[in-house]
Length: 486
Image (cartoon, rainbow, N blue to C red; front, top):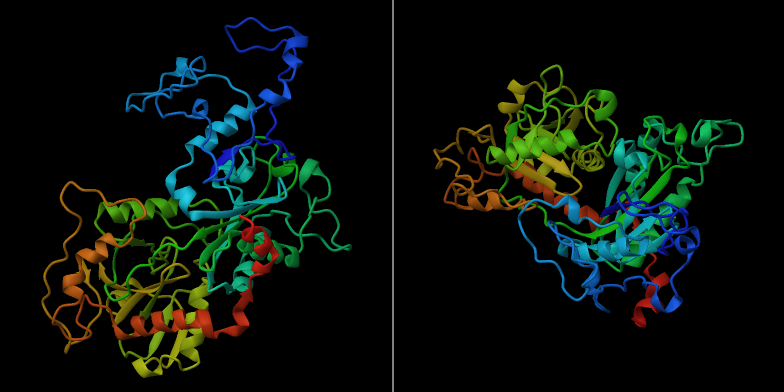
């Protein structure tokens, strides 16, 4: 999605320039001419949704050179040379939006299905219109939080858990999103006065479900964000006009194959201190660097260690281990890491006896020293996108196994020499180990997926359909008439 400085009304109409103001190096026009609006017949129309009409050729821009406005029939030729600053034009708001429409990348057009913005208070299903104010402090200061839920067969899974965590994150980040009760008094916020809180929990939930319904997707990921809001580029949110709420619905990403497992490396990137690690903020630079370090070392994910040297978490998932006796599923405490909704459900399933068939009697959260973790019978990653994926290799050493299952497997092979992993392709490294994981070795050899991780993965997948208490119906009927006329 792009960031834009849309007017609060959401209008795409061009804004008249100030009288007598002109770009540097050009004579100012007269005030009367500067304020004159173009005839209605020549005003740029809002670009249509994908599949109707292509954006005008004059709107096409390239990375290196902008098409000459004087020759709208000839788009610029893409090039890998540096951008020529002298060729960058000053254009109207309408032309900016036309260029944004032309620049929409294929992944957005294919996967981004619906978007809600409280700034414009509307839902769009056109990825080319999924923009937000650039001066939102969420964008330029990282003063924002988010959460993610999964939609399975038209029902939102664990939406209420994720929404509760989201609200806790807004409170920790001091984003005054929710309506304050009458006796709460001022909480700060826009212009230094009482908080302009415009949502309650029920309205947030309803907006999320309505946006999913507008997408038409029965299997999707829905992300929702809260920002301190637009108002300027200072550090304090006192300048922010009002908090913002955004929802985006996308097609599901393919999760990793649990039958193959994942390789991890200990990350040198410092873990976030607990007050920040326990809040799901939009500041994911450390998380992104953890992934990049893992890719550079031919692994899928990185693992953080806490400030005390214990095991922490992955870049966007929790980590769990099966103790040496094979009876306990342990995970680090949420005092140091983000409280994962999927990890919490996994612990509940274990404590309900749903993993008894693979020897697990209980689940507990406690400190996990690195030495204990490396000696664990099994290790696994747990999260809402991946469900549960076995860790089969850690810092180049095979994980898990027992005396009966330990064998000398072939060394793990990474990416082809000189070939970088493709961005977003989480399965490449796993496929390279498929021969080892599916070969003629005992069921739980070191470096192969263990029975607990595989059983937990299956339990979590079944939970999408059987956990009625945590499934929310999506009101697709609200938009059925509109879709039937498309």
